[in-house]
Image (tube, rainbow, N blue to C red):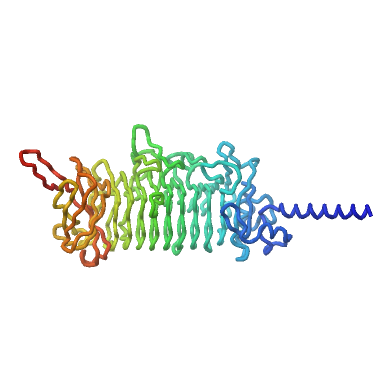
Length: 549
């Protein structure tokens, strides 16, 4: 009897050990649909399991920074050890719908040769890309570097370096992929190509050094030849949020497709949101061997949101410069229906005036039907906003702040127009060019009276007033508010405080219909007006008049 009881105990112990061993199978394995695993593994990795805020059916855990040249597209973490990033992506690629979403997470030990102890980060150098690019994230694949235990809290723990080979970093196909918490460096094409719908890229670095204090080359002046995040045509409803990108000859974020949202990214700056300036300069000199923040953003197609409704939603772009005579704008926009709001151009993330070396918003490609509001544009090398296309139509500009300390530059190269706060090139429709915004007729204390611009009747137009100073530089230092004109074009506005002696007002008018400015749609906004300033002479009689310049 004792012998039988001992046998039973041994058997139970074996079963218990076996169950424990199966339960500890690392998360490198897919669910039972792709491998004949014990049922207890399927239980541990059941559908809708979670890791922090990740919801996934299949889990794959990368546990090494190695990248084997011979892996190609065939080796996976199911059959080969250790589990590298390449093998994890290979394993995720062919999974069928029942096994998705698939989460690629990280648990690399500090004994790994790619561990950077001074930073608390792990660096994966893709030496195998000389022959094989990484396979695509093939739908409902989550790649999350923030899942790596331990490590730093002031930057991505996982760094992926392309080793300078001419191929893409990650390509997001077949919808609903996510890339989080990864630093990417040294790819000669786009670091991430968004080639499908409803993908998300957030909390990543692109083009920066391991510690984020300079560019990936280790130099402030040597940018990468590729780009950051590139949307393929027809890629819709994607999100690019809270990333830091700098130092690209190509575009940091190239937006194509419809309904995409690009918000709260820092472009052209170091990871701490600052720009190093040469000694003796209080903003970027835009010349010589200076910080090369690179090119920022292009936007095309339809109904994309760049920024967002709250100030923290906006993208910040500063220090944009390449060592070339032709500086790109911070944002080059074509297409229709975009919302561009709460972006900051020329201030770094610490609100330091840094500037950008090209234009701020370039609408020379003729975008239409846009809402452009609450953007701040400071110390651009050329115009703050450029209008220069016959197809400009229905673009509403509201509450945009424009600041510059010195005169706007003269005409550049073959351009026949001078730069300005809002520059009109020769292709702007004549009806818009010649439309005169609302005029101020009287300034009396805090009460402002006005009417339609001379020769430009504007009944029921929306009039916005801006504060400016009385120097010779056209600016819009602060939006004071909006008012709707009556049927005769007359309006009245009350300031919260009287103008000071060095202050004046400018206006912009937005039309309510498609015939106030002939041939242009409702919502079209004029250029800034001349400056209206109060002059007071303290003589026996006090005179008040409105002067303009």
